[in-house]
Image (cartoon, rainbow, N blue to C red; front, top):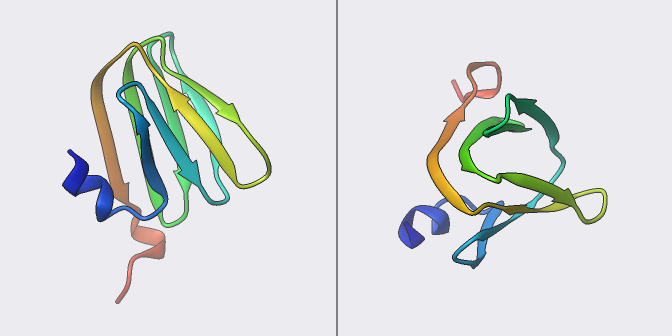
Length: 82
């Protein structure tokens, strides 16, 4: 998993239950167990127990969770190269 996060420059691992998001983003909540984030040209969904996003300024946030069941990251078509 650490190798994956090295390829995604806007996400950093803080500890085993915390990720740091750097950049301009928007937050959306999907039900009780999921959070969606949009950071052009990417869209992310995190599903699990106690997933929370705490903004720490205009362009940073901490994503915390008790258990992460699914993490989805896609590059959106409207900003794709080519």
